[in-house]
Length: 193
Ligand SMILES: Cc1cc2nc3c(=O)[nH]c(=O)nc-3n(C[C@H](O)[C@H](O)[C@H](O)COP(=O)(O)O)c2cc1C
Image (cartoon, rainbow, N blue to C red; front, side, top):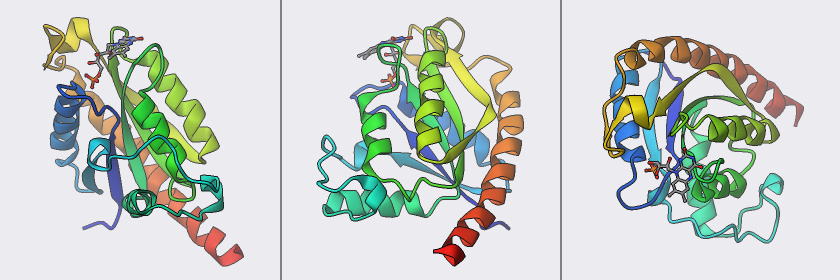
């Protein structure tokens, strides 16, 4: 039994997205691990508009109901698995917008990255690391990258390569370790505040 909660952030929102299949596969894999509870956060469910808060998110004064709902959804997690597509050599606009919308709810947590694209979404994954540094999220080294050549049939049916499932556990080892460790950073920050 654990009280560690990991959110699986599905970063593509378009109709027919491959990301939905990747999210389901990741959820099925991680659910075998008893060290944390895992929940998919589908950004499409939040219908966030383009960022529309008057006060920057880092001030933590969210005015809009959609922002408050998204903040509550992110706040409850100790760590994240960020699922990102690669659009024009970066992450989706939807995922960047979601990162921008709230701030404190991301801080002092850990994240692992899963990406897909013609070169495994590698360029998007690197951008996730840069953005999360500013959000004070520690990204673990181990990551999963899925290519159209090896992991999708006809660019649309997710059929991960034989080694993919075995790569999940080492990634979770790092994510669980850092997510647990950063809890104490958040607790100390609350004492200091
Ligand atoms: C607007 C757009 C831009 C894209 N740019 C890239 C790209 O730069 N590199 C890449 O590997 N794939 C690119 N693709 C292909 C995506 O990797 C592919 O559509 C993938 O399935 C996207 O994830 P999704 O289906 O979950 O939206 C692009 C797709 C879209 C829709």
